[in-house]
Image 1 (cartoon, rainbow, N blue to C red):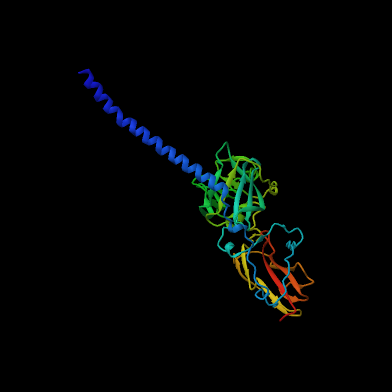
Image 2 (image 1 turned 90 degrees about the horizontal axis):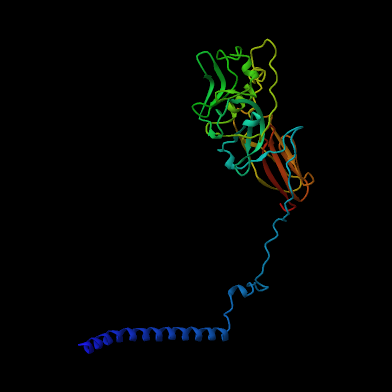
Length: 350
């Protein structure tokens, strides 16, 4: 009986031994094939790469130069000149994408009680500080830091049953940017004369109470959806507003007093971007669509960076003088400094 059991066990072990031997033979064969390939790779030359070959060249007869229709000139560095005395140099070079863009952003530095108006740049970012205004902020942390937008505008907002705020824009249900409080919807009866004196302090319930000049600037120039950022910093600073005259009940900065509204040009077009002229030829450069239509800009400046090549007068008449390239500047005379560049190529070839 015991002998029979041993035979059965031996029969069960045989298949396992066979499988192990077959696996070992297969592994040895794979190893031998890999060694053979490695040896062959060491003796065979590496096929050349197509990037090692020289670039194809044209036969001398086939290499025909481009026809000499017009000489070419290396563009020169072009720094837009300042249009008028004291004019800010950080203008913006316009392109068609600026036509429908929101031209300004609002940055509020709480620690310095400042509202900064930032102009859009060529990349669509708000990096150019155009104006700064002093403002009152909320007590404690009622004017909360964060990102907001202008939701609505009101020429007069009913602040309470007895007070109204001019040039008001709403940012949230509890936060607005507005001018001093008035007792009626006119500028003769300031609600409390000291609420003008409190500009530059933490006294409000969360709103940004600023001067009429600042509130009007935002009201007239910043459309709905204009971005607003409120930060706990002093990134921008501002001057104290002028003192109120003794015995008066109005904001001395109010632009409505003597029509001192400032509405810069945010976009305009010109009738040419590249001109090709011969010496002695002229071209009338003209400004086209201007936005906003009710702007208060003092017209446009025309200037040439290379007057030896071509000049332009203050009416936009370009005159070509000598072969070369001249960069022309057309710039709005206002704080935004929006400008367009016109390249004039002058050649002897008609």
